[in-house]
Picture (tube, helix red, strand yellow):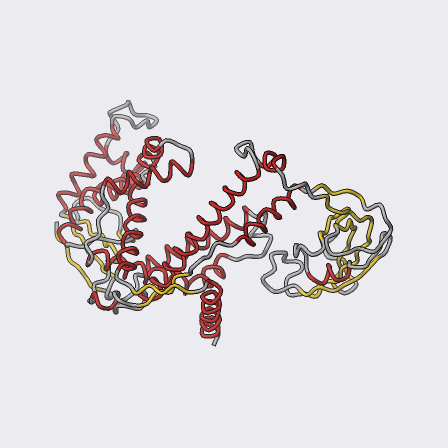
Length: 452
């Protein structure tokens, strides 16, 4: 076997592998000998079909299997001899092998970029960590949200116009100009005034409307509106008020708490759970913000070419994840007019940033000698067990059977590396609102750059 390496770019390589004719003949002859005992061709007894006849009937099939066998038995050795390791699925290029001739195939793939990175580049920089204070107001808001969900809707007995907080029952039609919009009608729709669940123009039109009134308003829908029939258009809504309802909120007492879940003996138990959930959410927000700042900082460290295969893989995953989330929310991506190629274009820059940050993070893992131990894996499974209610051993078995252990190890490695970077950073606690404002400003500036 002969192996030669061609450097196509800083990260792309092409291997040319040449196998001698005798190896090709051995593989092809073995396949025909196996076929000879099983082939059923009219006019010939089993095992007595001449080779030329087998070649006429099964030549393409044997060529395909021979290609797979020859590549399968030499691929790992060729990579080992070249000293290279693909970081994504390689592309194979070859012609069908022929008896008496050498067989040559090529493998094109990306390798991990090689670049220099000094520890000073990712150590000692400032991280703004949001400092969350105990907030009784937010706990109260969560309790009120639970009351809203448990509220009963009862018809309004007094005759008066609709107010914020009422639920208005309407029939509506929609028009583009004078033409009805396909699928744009509904009967007995509940509109909760002040909830923000519908367009503001509709809420404004219904405030002060009485039962029997018909009101009109026009709503402009952005180009990215999921409903393709309304996207980028001014749509006129004609709404007829059929009824008014008011919300009857339950008392905030022990019975209310028990109605939320059997695990709550009294109102205090519910408050304790909400407080715990709030603190966990704040910790997650803190971790996500620190992670964002670390990745933003390290992304541009080091000079290297981006592996196109990794970027393409990341784009594909982003597109599929986006479509999956749409479907979970009840939207059909195709009906919404979402084109895969356009989505891929939209996610391209984001994918490139993610891949670049991941590569630098991997380099830092090497420099910091970060490793994932069995203890780390066991601790992660214990955490997952507490979160899911499944025994750790069951979860471990599931991960092993689904070959998901490498991805879990990679995730733990990434988290430990982020923690190592954070440990060497300067942590400055700041007000969450102040940090949110800075983050939004940066996002707006990046948006302006991408469209300029």
